[in-house]
Image (cartoon, rainbow, N blue to C red; front, side):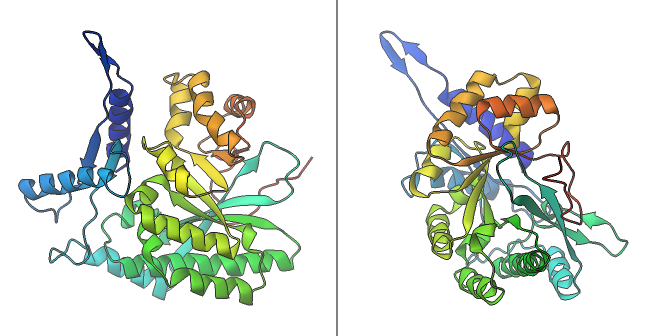
Length: 335
């Protein structure tokens, strides 16, 4: 999916950036790209092409501008079932037998005035031989919304408990919690979560729901309603993978967010000199004007940190600072 996303993004940006001359007229155009993933359970080629066309047409619905890409998502009411039963059972077993583990990666402020620790919470599934598996591997073939909601609820419940334990020890942590795209449609999740934070007496603004730009674009109405409910709870919102599509401005137009995490491609492109500092500054400038805290992931060295600081990025994250660990033990405030 990441390879398809990167290719589609490059094509969209390349075409929208072209200015063609036809006599005295100048012509600009955009493209809509539909992507259908192929697996062992995929239907025949004609149906795959229909799926890709359906995904492309979705880019013109719900006031979207038609410029960008979209992944096909199987309608749950369809008689065609592509759910990987083994993958679903693996997740259910992990929840039942407590085989999920949480890792924590620090998000470090480039401004020393911030006095609260920030961590992104990362989920891993532990196999029978003790290996830790990323969700990217076991989630792609799961089309059961209820199972994904149960998984997200498990993560939220663990985070609430860990935050309560940290506060009892006098530590203040702000946790960035990833939410799957289909959980945005779950109307029962946030009322349940509100009761969790009330019963644990936790400050809601210490919990940040991290939502992918692609997931927000796939279900804009659900995304807007979900974020509205989060604001009422006083939780914070982070839009991650910002800039991974050409409709980033559309996503920001209706929903106010507290944090934006730039897509990792920008950092890779900056490192390879395929994007200039001036181009990245042009992307960042309107975000700074909205008073949104900017986070840069995948930071590889101090040179990148220095560049990002001069561009106005407030927070950074990456293996250079610290890879994900089982404990929230980064030395944020050591002199």
